[in-house]
Length: 334
Ligand code: 2RA
Image (tube, rainbow, N blue to C red; front, side):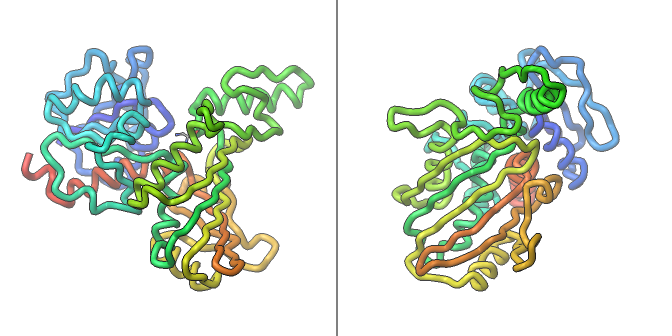
């Protein structure tokens, strides 16, 4: 089987390549593809270097599986072409997340959607800000979700490489008593927090907040679930955090809530010591969603989540979908 990773130089693309290698995905050949400006650059795949090919001139004819992490414009332009050539596509962009014909899948939440897919299937992967949250909410679902209120603490890597450079450059500039140049974000991010990610709609809800509302509802299959989101950019490089408050039909104490989260694959570290919680720094580089600070007031449960946004929130679900398709026999019939 030949696999193409489109957007191979992006942070998520590089992480997909790393996970394919580390997890031993049985590809006969992996091809790195990206925008024409990145053609000829190299990216790491295990202990090998792959030369990047330009998407505009790339033919998907030999490709059985195309993993896209290149943003919505590239996905809209090239996913149909990959499928027309017979490839199955997993897309980590917003391009198809609202298309009712396209399954929106986070393997930790609704892997059953990956059964019985048609030839040259397309699977959309939710926003990295949604997947760990939906995983936790799915675990609590037997208690009856009534209302979800979430504030996010999103690292700059969610905005890509240039955003990481902006935080580094601004931090250095401020240490050197120089002006911190602002280009990627609307205001200075170093030593600051920005309570707006994306544009706002007529109601004042940001793109990122709308994505959390819509995709959480869709993943859980609860289109009417009240979800209130406030998405905030913070000056950390990797790892997103979520402060979650859930109103439940049936109240649950913190101990039982911890057991439910653990049963859904979430790791709980919640000790009553000064450092008995997990931060984005410790969540970075591992494949786990972490929960801490679990507490209850009546039927309302509050907790903290953190996860590596690039790896656990994006690259891992993409690769896990590829693995599940393989396990379900999808490629055997092609
Ligand atoms: C962010 N969730 O963190 C977005 C990236 N998809 O900016």
